[in-house]
Image 1 (spheres, one colour):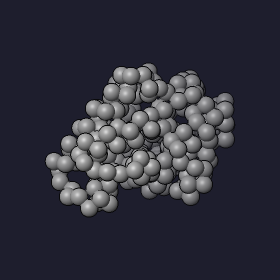
Image 2 (cartoon, one colour):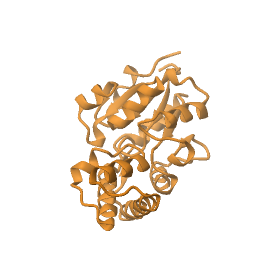
Image 3 (cartoon, one colour):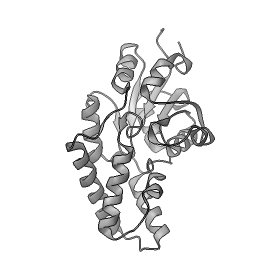
Image 4 (spheres, rainbow, N blue to C red):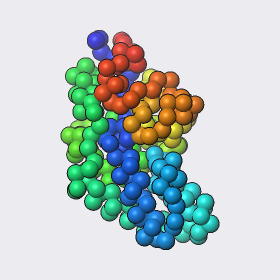
Length: 227
C-alpha cells in the first residue's frame, strides 16, 4: 500500500488493550470502599470519559458531596485496584493490536496514543503493547486540561505528530471517543471491543465500526487515505 496521508490517533483501554471490564471492577471496588453503592452496568456506561468527570457524574447521581478529597481518594483507589489486575495478568493487548501498530509503522503511517487515563495506569498498558512513550507520541490525562468527551487529548496527539487533525482518524471503543472525535473535527472509527454496540458508536459519530484491532487491520484499506 502506498504511504498514507492519514494519521491514526488511538484510544488505549478497550481499543488496543483488553481492559475495559477490569477498569469497571476497579472503579466498583473504589466506590464500594468509599461507601458509594452503584450497579456495575452503570459504571460501565461511563468508562472512556475522564476519571474526574466520571467520578463527578457518579457522585452527582448518588447525591453525595463532590469534594476534591473524595475524588482524589477514589482515583487513587481505582489506580491501585486496576494495577493489581495487571499484576495478576488479566489485562492484555487485544487481538491484532501489536500487529496493527507494527503495520502502520512499517508503512510510514503516523500514529499516536491518546488516553483519558493517567500515566499511573497507562504505563502498564503501554508496556504490554511494547510502546515506548519516549519514541511514540503518547498523550495522557495528565497532559491536557480536559479529557474525553472533550477533544483536547486528540488535538494534542495530532499536534505531537505535526499532522492536521482534519486528516486524522480517531480510533476508539466508546461513545466518549466518538464524541471527542467529532468535537476535534476528526473522523471516528469505532471498535466493539469496549462493549458498546455498533448502533451506539455510529450514532455518536463513527463512520466505520470494526470488531477489534485485528478486524481493523484486515480492512485498513477502507480507511487509510493514500498520498
